Amino acid sequence: EWLPEKLQKQFDCIRQDKQIGICYTGRKAVRKGNLIFGLGKKYSFKYPPDGDQFKAIMSDNFIGITSSVMIPRKILKEINGFDELLPCFQDYDLYIRIMKHWKAAGINEPLVRYHLDGNIKHVSLTRQEIKFASRYISKKYENEQYHPILVKAIQRINIKKMMKSFVYAKEVVSNFFKTV
Image 1: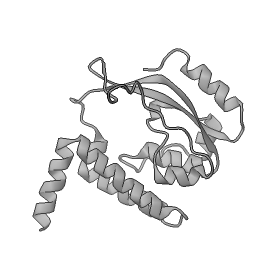
Image 2: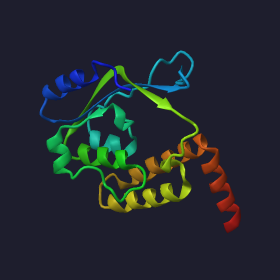
Image 3: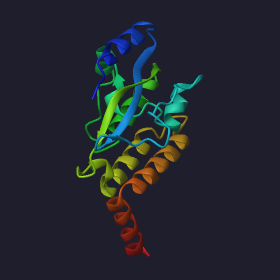
Image 4: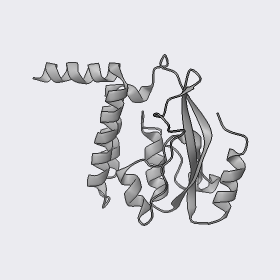
């Protein structure tokens, strides 16, 4: 759910600097009408790092969900949009390709309300799809200077996904015992 001023603020942000390839905003996660981001924390946002933003995105998806981003059309066309071979992590891969040539700008305001529904099955929470995507991305960027950093970032993402999903955790544990 986008707040009414989201698009205008992002247009204005992107127009300020031709080097900006992606603009993202803060977001509130909502489950059944209740905010879920920690006690006292009203929304989620990470500032774009100073310095080498390509290294930073290889280390951590500081941009976050696609609902909060705006990308100029010419940039999306130039990098050929989402990689349709990926069953998950499409957003992270897209951000990596953008950050290789442009920089990110963030608007530290919760301009998106991200509604979560535990009853929806997410592709990104199945072990098989995550395993495939993890290997695919690792191979895709194996010649990049920051590849070792990316591998560690993917491992952290996998652990977080496992912790968020009982089904995924159960798949990992049962698979482990089948191989032992």
